[in-house]
Image (cartoon, rainbow, N blue to C red; front, side, top):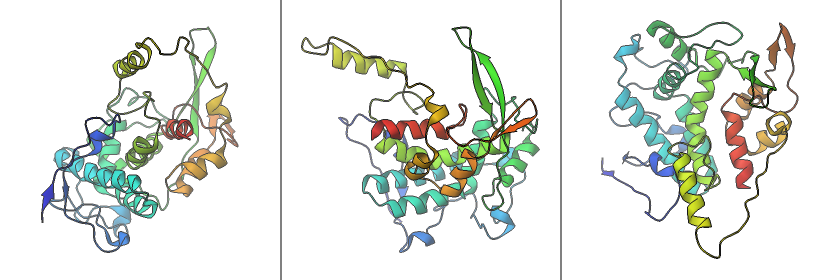
Amino acid sequence: MSERTETPRASEQTSIWFLITRESGKPPKEAKQMSAETGNTIEQVDESANAGAASHRITDWHAIDWYQANRNVKRLQTRIVKATQEGKWGKVKALQRLLTHSFSGKVLAVKRVTENQGKNTPGVDRSIWNTPQKKMNGVYSLRQRDYHPQPLRRIYIPKKTGKMRPLSIPCMRCRSMQALYLLALSPVAEVIGDRNSYGFRPERSTADAIAQCFTVLAPKRSAQWILEGDIRACFDKISHDWLLTHIPMEKPILRKWLKAGFMEKHILHPTDEGTPQGPRIAQRGFDELIAM
């Protein structure tokens, strides 16, 4: 099986370069027959057996081959990028499903939410995954078939103005599911998203934004004024129907997240519009809104 290396053009200003990694072989004849883990794999995913577990079940968190897991996910992300660039949305959907059902994707999602700054902040279930065994149990709990998100826990944090900003915290399982689907959504967003959007974007930083500002403002004939805008209650009022129409991911899962509601002072509040500040999917929707 031949291998080839692909690199983006040097003049192309985009952050999708980080997704382009070594790809092995060609996809099978039908998208539904594509394997999520090709080449030298950790394990083969079988959703019908053991509710999405690997064919030979890994029980030790420290026994996971992280290099291979990253390689498997990056390979699928690369194929998603190519399919998006070619406008093959059926293939994009099939590849996203493979990634979100793969063992490699699930372990990387759990690793991400259990090693970031919010790893010790629980949701409404007051549970955190702070041991190797809990992390492995969390990996095998990421099943789409019986997934029902819990309401978010509403807290308030102070703003510079003295007011309080509402923040909604998902439970660990919901956070992991969102991180899992973000792995499949990021390649699409990096292709169709705004080229000069720098917030919540992988491989982009404040320095990149400063460099772009210098590029467009330094010439003598550049604009003399900068317009700063703030969309009032953007996340609180954004349309669920718009998100369901335009976010390229599994609609039943996205609908469950949008309708999960939040708990405040032991009272469940429904969410008929908007998306809580906190979940990662909201920012992807905003990036796509900018791109349109």
